[in-house]
Image 1 (tube, one colour):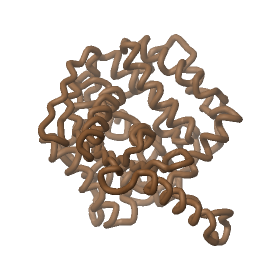
Image 2: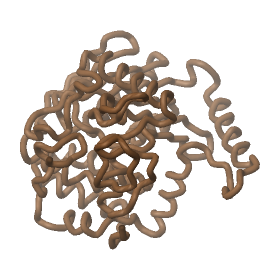
Image 3: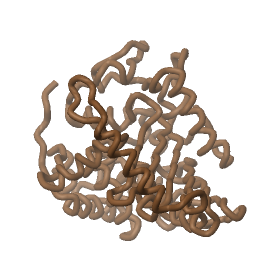
Length: 357
């Protein structure tokens, strides 16, 4: 496989191109702005699996009525520190962002804010949300269920989704620590990114239709849990917290991304926000996080490594690099963003991997 031609853009240019495309598909400006902000945020940090590569899918779902363009959002506070945000099948990025605001408010008032998001669409990179909380001196943990596309440890058929976990904590003199991971070896979006760039994947990421490891992203039929039974346990935990806890479908019953793109989704997410000042001195807490990072940086690196980094630091380093050099976007995706084409009509009635069989 050969690398495809790339185009470099600024984060603002990418944001504006994405917002314009989603507005043309029918999404309201305020909602399109947040979706574009989330996707540009991801691409700007090298998380291309959750960036512009997703616009065609979102545009098709919006244009075909699969996303509610005028959702009736409601926040039902169920206790001093808890609540459920009814997303009414609005676009997931905007709904998740509104729910996050409620969780942060509760944490500021009571020390803890736990808010579930009910009946939402796909919301992109969870790092975008937890970072916002950390920038307000909060600790954040967010989890979200997803389509069944992962074989359980010891199994041969998909049951759970990639079920991501994101964590963020504030620092005193630096940007927050932000850590975002799928509970699979890699997120499905990484497969999409590899397909868009026509490059191979490591043989530890996924399996083909026969259950054998594959390096061809176009042959992927199921993903593998990270660290075997440990990742399997984490993805079950995420599914329970963001699905069963909210009275939503679970496991292999989770609402499909592609089966009927004209229908709404019944997806769940959970934001857990902690106010450190209710547990310890805030400034001391942030100083300790800075000290932790400094000590990690000063640690002796392993062979072939220049320095020990904290989890998620590579994304921040990538953001700094791309700010100077521009964000690399596959030219085919860039050409789509600047074109008059709303979408390519390729996702409806597809399987969990976005393929029409």
